[in-house]
Amino acid sequence: MADRHADIAIASEENWLKQYYFVRTAFSAVWVALAFSLGRHSPASIAALLIVYPAWDALANYIDMSRSGGAVENRTQVVNVGISVLTTVGVIVALKLGAHGVLGVFGVWAILAGLLQLGTAVRRWKRFGAQWAMILSGGQSALAGVFFIVQGGAPMASAIEKVAGYAAVGAIYFLVSALWLSAGQLRSKMARTS
Image (spheres, rainbow, N blue to C red):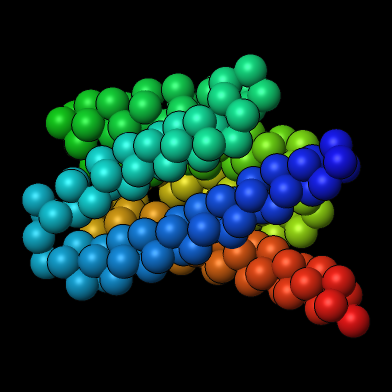
């Protein structure tokens, strides 16, 4: 009986994680579309999009952390929420000081958030499996962060395009993870019925 309750709890958490990955995919896809459309024509749109992206990451990580056992069980996400909030503030400050610092702020954030995402994925792998795309995403994010720092002097229009490319790759990783979890659930369901 206890095993059945544990299996139900894991299935519920896995369903949440799959939905979370699909929502992250959808948000990133919309954000990238806006970055490549509005972001090419309006400095105000560029600024708003650059502020919204890390703010959304903070909110998304907070909701996931809350739904996945809370702060005690998800320390990497607690730190990630804090770093994303600080990054949002850092982007606002960098925008006021000039465009050259925005990519530097995003670079530091991408490195730290990527490493924390990698840590979260490794921890989740033990419980759910299907985290290889999130592990790759975390590693890729850290590498992209280094690239952002090196490119820190790029003009604002170029900065939004670089961050949009980063977000697009992230959306693909979230989509792959959601689909991988869906396929695993389907395989499990088919195994139980056969």
